[in-house]
Length: 394
Image (cartoon, rainbow, N blue to C red; front, side, top):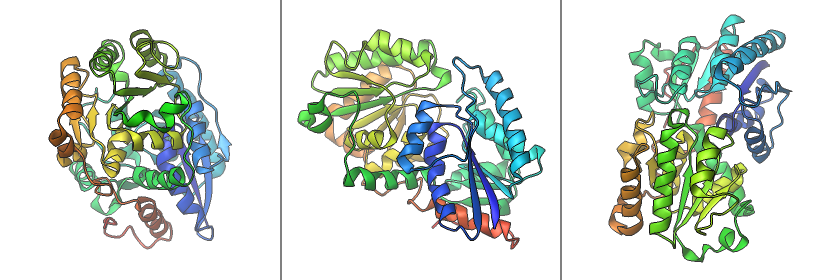
């Protein structure tokens, strides 16, 4: 049995690593799974864990109010270095581009433990966008042993940086695995959507729904002001459309959102609904109900194609160009005129809407079996039979 330590700290990491943890646990004769969380995000992390029935073996509980990146990084490196040294795993698994994955990579490196990096190879080529995520994932790649790239494009990014091809595995994205698991549960037992008036949460009177999410640091300040102003303009222009915004807990997000779009659960205008961060299953139910999505989230860009939902990306760049190439996503940045124009087109031009919609299941990011491929590659590596040919997709 190989002790395998899975480390994560935020809600997106928990969602994307939950299918991997569950797949590892289905092979107890091979893997001794230990889950360690940094709790870089506290409340939102716990919501995601509850959705998948995963309880961490170790909770470092590192989150502090108004924490700086430097302070979090210092605490996380010290705590993870100590924890990895105590656990002595055969393999560390981490995901994505957060401060937690960077610190997990360093802790594994310091303790001479191989690191498996899930969702490896995403790049914008700009260290300022997304910030600090682009730097985190580039640095983690330099320290990783196994690279689980979600797409062929991500694999090519790694090859260009000199990563050995035999260490790269194209697996698809585990976000799609998680989405399919969640959809099964949502359909079997529709969850509540906390904060929405009951009639809206169930019937919506057939009204279009625009789902909004936003949290990227590079948009803090004027960027979020502009995004909120665009949403306010759209809500006034389309009074029948319901605009639903689960607001991230970061004060740099909450202050402009609540000041510009209204306080409380729903705005005075009546068709803007500001919610607290939703449990994952509730969010998936809302995602499935939405007509279109305005977001700066990477995960939503991955999930939406499986549901046939157009996405307007509130960023200047994306490390997920496959969605743009497939026509399901379009970059609009924090540009008020562009946000309003593109949203209005999707709401009023059926042909344009259809051009950005895709039949469910046709997703460039995967087929829902990424975790199986990741676990198979980890087993092969740990059993010492070599890393194979690096292609596990298809």
